[in-house]
Figure 1 (cartoon, protein in one colour):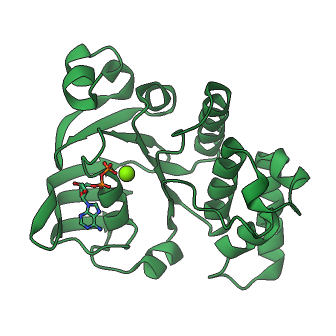
Figure 2 (tube, rainbow, N blue to C red):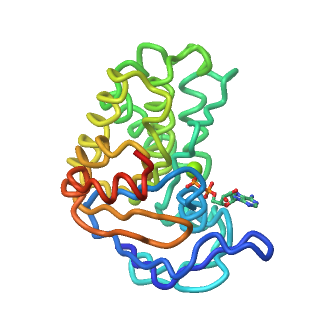
Length: 234
Ligand SMILES: Nc1ncnc2c1ncn2[C@@H]1O[C@H](COP(=O)(O)OP(=O)(O)O)[C@@H](O)[C@H]1O
Ligand SMILES: [Mg+2]
């Protein structure tokens, strides 16, 4: 579904990603791990069109998409769930979900999809009239995922959804990702939590200083002390 080849990204003269190559099969969950500042968010931003790569190729469903803008990527179903969730705190839960559908016009389909999101995350239905800022961290994560689904995501780019959550809420995020996978969604999951990656992903890639330093089975990563120590700093 997604094939990234020799991707490089720079901020000004500072090259942050170098020669990054990997692919994501349709219907799979692929984890992207790495310490702070290793370039994970930069990579997602390049794939979702928020920043233009300096070189290399991004093929999505057979089409070269490197250099397309975020709107064009959203319309193709490539939707990012941003780091820090970034819900609109003063707006209601349902208005936040509506915003996810901003590029769409078929009201009936939008209503149906909102029903799907509520079926997936029942707590959002209960709290739909509440301000998003009043939700717990885990509920806000569900809301940010729901907003991406409202954009008709086919490839979900999730940026550290578990960060800052209690262990119970981390379990809820794992559960949500597994349910999305069951529905056939394709997910590229950025994490620092190796346990989350191992619980949901088949393949894992580890970024270190802007290059892919390890690639393999996610479940083997968790047993690889060398990878854990040198690339993830624990
Ligand atoms: N907008 C920006 N301008 C300049 N440098 C940036 C910008 N965003 C991130 N960086 C730098 O790029 C590197 C990778 O950052 P980032 O992709 O956010 O890493 P991660 O998500 O893995 O923590 C870091 O050294 C960071 O300081
Ligand atoms: Mg980041």
